[in-house]
Amino acid sequence: MANTTVSKILGIAITAICIASTPVFSADWPNFHGPDRTNKSRETGLLRQWSTGGPRLLWTASGIGKGYSGATTSDGIVYTAGAVDNIQYVFAFDAGNGRQLWRTQAGRGWEGWDGRSRAYEGSRGTPTVDPAGNTVYYLSDIGYLIALDAKTGARKWSVDIAKKYDADVPKYAYSESPFIRGDRLYVSPYGRKASVVSLDKRTGNEIWASPAFNTGNRTGDAGYTSFVFAENSGFGQIMSHSSGFVYGMDAQTGRMLWSVPWKNRMEDNCTDVTFHDGYVFTSGGYGEGSMLVKLSRDGNGVKAEEVYRTKLMDNHHGGVILHNGYIYGSGHNSRGWFCLDFRTGRQMWNAPGKGSITFADGMLYFYDEEGTMSLVRAQPDRFELVSSFEVPEGGRGAYWAHPVVSNGVLYLRHANNLYAYDIKNR
Image 1: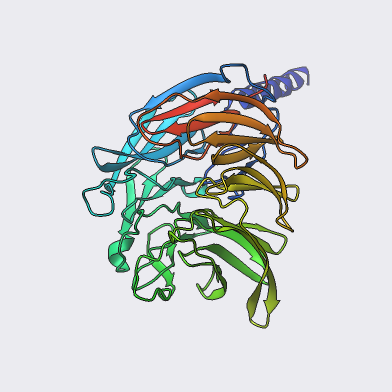
Image 2 (image 1 turned 90 degrees about the vertical axis):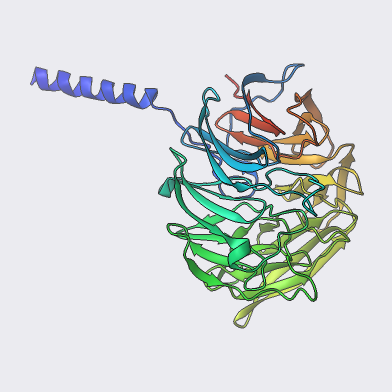
């Protein structure tokens, strides 16, 4: 009896030691803008203030090439993409020390509008990780969709969606991060044969393809955004933009459920929609501003009613955050960081700057496109800057990659470098 008791105690102790020594990745960031694409981390216990020079730099991963792809994380691995010598690559790094685990080619890179200008060259979309299938998905800037083994980088399947669906590469190249739900992958070729497609994530085979959107005399009607999913009005909807309207489709069938005109003068809607409580918020650069739409069931479809339009916070491509009834983000022509009332569009505050954003533990992370990283309290009554620091240069170009907070680490990318900062309050 005594030996049995001792054995049980030892067994419990050994189990506890094993659990304690096993890495825990409870705050992984497997998609562009996070697990649910709201761009909000559920992490707590993070630093509420940084030292003068910023939080401790854990590691720098160099050699990721040109581009603006952000980071995704899953099971102790960090993924991103970039163009090296005009070849696209997906990269995987050890989250603990930044050591490169693998890199896999994803086709040639985009060469600018005319093949000579090389304007804003480099990767755009961010790799999407499906932990359940041990797979990483990436859509290159010229429309090459690839599925890779998450641990080794081995190729599982690929589809040239631009070629298959007869699409012209958009003016600013494909910028979408693939969306996974269940066994399906959703992506937007915006071609003459289809605008949006649903594929079997395991094989890349087509499940459905929507008819081509009406683009008049133009093709490549891309909005440069990624899908957001919401259950609303009895439908599971994928929501996004074309260059001319914001819309929602039935995720099961591809049927268009609703759309509302939304177009800026450059025809490049780049900000993902924000859905909450039956409302859809969208924002567009070049002076377009912001709009809120209310959705409701209408027979066998969905009715979309415009609630308001405002010229405030014409978000360029840095994204927005909804927190406790208020929208945070930056403007383009209406330059500056903004806080707006979600339901009314009323301005709460405005502060200098422009860039991309994320959220964690009650704080906003403002990544200015000139390289300043700022920690700001998420509150509507006033703008309160807590801390800031300058991010090192990783090459030429603006700081356009979106920041990521995952498992106590702040990931920031600039050009050829990916930086990992320790922001855990230890």
